Image (cartoon, rainbow, N blue to C red; front, side):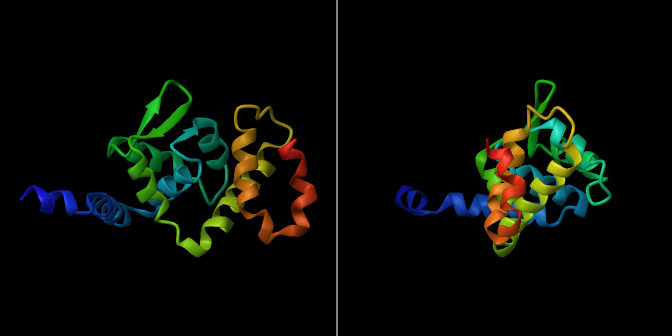
Length: 151
């Protein structure tokens, strides 16, 4: 019945199926998906490079390799990763509990900011600022420290 098919909320079903598959993946792969989803549909490879130098994200590179092998993301050119569809990115973003999202962004931004100090981060400076801006309201004492990112 065509009317029944048209009335079905396929988008929710697809998101649920993608999310269900992602929730069953290893922690490293979920970390890669969550991290990438915070940066939108595309993410610079240098972000993974910076993050992989920390103990918390030391396995993110192998997680990204799995994400690409499973078809959730593709490599674009030599320096970017891209979700294959915005709904895949949305499902990955749902891996982060709603009440933790701003802090998750802020944590990513502060890690990247501290690791990249003194480096030429021209290609990711806006990504860092965007992540920090998500959670700065919860950390008002740090506003002045990060104000230079928005200049």
